[in-house]
Image 1: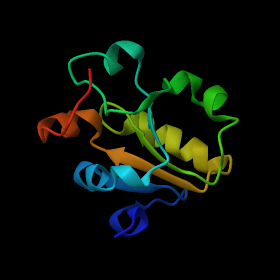
Image 2 (image 1 turned 90 degrees about the horizontal axis):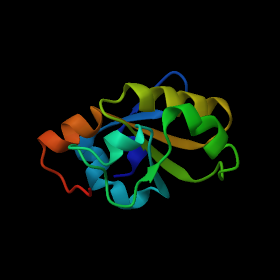
Image 3 (image 1 turned 90 degrees about the vertical axis):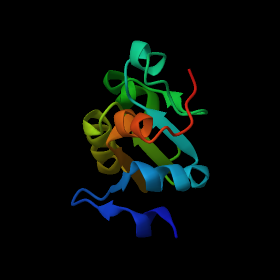
Length: 116
């Protein structure tokens, strides 16, 4: 199953993936983008190993030069900020963008692997 099949297509063109699907498909993404703040990334909820910290306020600048054809999983604490980042990424031409619904709160609830 690919991420498109597992996710829900949103009107803006990105996909919503629940945490368990995102975890199963983690190795299919070219990059995992965490849009939380630095203190959240290193805080009690931890972060996904190999994820890249790109706080939401900096997404436009930091992702402006990123390759548009790659597959990106975007996440935050609960899925709201990452949803805004995913919407922006699709709006500016990224082809394959996936928002992890429930964010690190749900990832943590499922006791999935964390880095700190």
